[in-house]
Image (tube, rainbow, N blue to C red; front, side):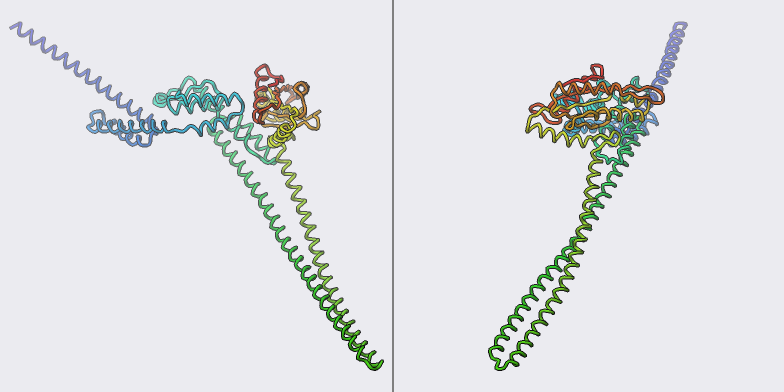
Length: 524
């Protein structure tokens, strides 16, 4: 009996332990299910917006998960989400397979400004052709780094970062990368604008702001300001077009008046010719009649009367003719005088319009800040010099200047100090030039020079003289001295050149001067 009692006690104890273990496992499973539900709900929230076709399924899945994993419809909804994910993946792969990167590489090639950037773009294109990018995101990230001149940059926070809201270690670096990209895009956009001289101050202000773009709000505000600037340019173009249209309308009206006057003179000539012809006929008739009467006359008195009457008729006809002719002449003279006045007015207006067009042309080709010719003027001049070099093969030196540490001048002393530095360097570069030499502000802190007929040695000597003058043209801002230096890259036209190749060579030499310590002149 004792043995049987001990066996029952053992089984009861073991049963109690199993029940306790089952309760514990049940609670753990329930806690795990709740954690799983919360995790899946967070995953669906993090994935929301990635695919429009997937979003409704994710929303329905969240609703079902809130009731727990024992919901009968949960499996059905999970299967629906799985199918939507597979379809989205297939569509994504198909989109990537069908993606034509021609436009992307065309944009990158357009943005490339020197040989280094062009080489980087070419390598990116070759890597894409070799299939070295696993997906489009990798390709676009590499392209954005290239635009921002970045060698290394982490990608933006991925799914886990969105899920748990954890900041990445390199968030600050990503923010600087994004800001640098925005600044470069804005600066290139602003450099490409052809802005009238009266709006140059706005353009310069926007360029200064573009160098320090912060968050998205500032970026979009700058885009709005650029759009506003473009609208002002458009409005001015329309105003000038209306002025030309009004002038042409006035010219048309005056030409119609001149045509009317010319027609009046033609009528006068026709009437005068007709009257002269009629007079000649009358005179001929009277003379012939007079001859007949003279022959038939038998008495002197009869002859005298016949001659007198016919002479009186001829005199009356002549007087009437001269009177009519005088009236026609006076009318024609009035017409000619009015036509002359109209022509003089047209000449005056034409001269005024010509002067206005010349002034606007000169203003359009002038940099308002420095007074030097601008980028447009440079493009026109280098095309002319290149064509002349192609005919006569006389050496032409091309010099590209860039102010050293210009951003630091703006940051430390303000943009007004930067403007003073630009004007000071412009004055130095424009001084002591030969009549055939040319200097222009290319954009930002860059200047460009053309020296026709200068050899390599002559160009280097002149460049170093100017570099020393720039070095000694410092100034004070708010009591603090500001020292200025500049780096210069030089080249000459060579066989097989284009204006773009020559500029790229000089630009590359200028960067070599900067990388070698700045305040130098390097021939490339």
